[in-house]
Image (cartoon, rainbow, N blue to C red; front, side, top):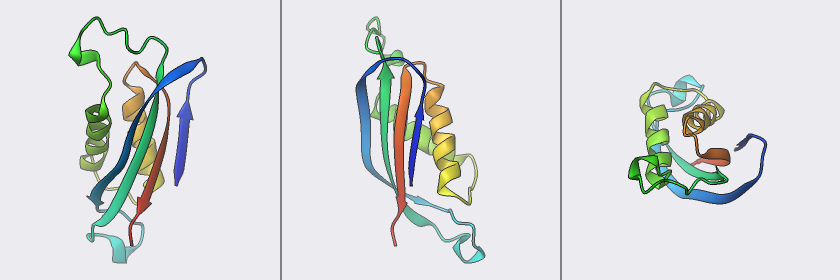
Length: 111
């Protein structure tokens, strides 16, 4: 499943979190509920121009930790039936960060 999100404007820098594996209670069918599945997250975030003009302030840095924290926030906020819902929620969390211009997210369940 791929998700592309974005705003208008020029872009240049990209931050990528690849192959982030999590055990997630997800699935729309009764047989899936309560049986965590392995989900692989691949997220690429494109940063707005000037994203690295941070005035030497570590609290303003968008990092891999920021992306992992977005995933954790969504996964601990409640169960979802669909990966697409999880993807939309992660995108919404990342867009709260003023430096995010657009992004691409791929998730897959391992069988």
